[in-house]
Image (cartoon, rainbow, N blue to C red; front, side, top):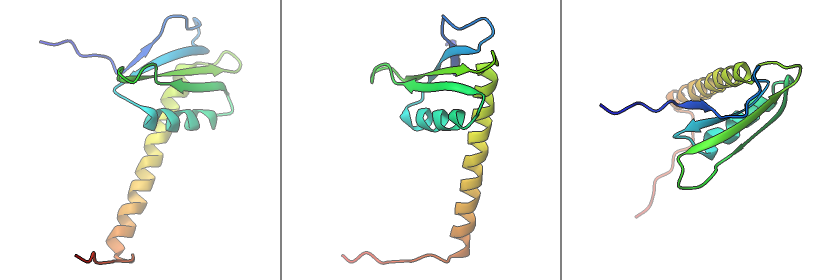
Length: 111
């Protein structure tokens, strides 16, 4: 059997209270990195957040989060992931509702 790889890993150098930490998120790219950074920066308790793709051949992103008042960056990350999931569900619901209404422009491609 193959060992399963964790989706998120906390890198060495994190503060003991996780108020500042760098996370590796596997099998992800700029698409979620930028959206997650945006969602984290909306949180007023987040002092800094940035992400990078270490090398194009590595299938991961690194996300650095620093918090004010020694709050947990892991809690902020989990909240941001939940908020991003809710946002995606809202957009998906609105799209499907609009599509089901049939009230959109149609065009036929000419050969």
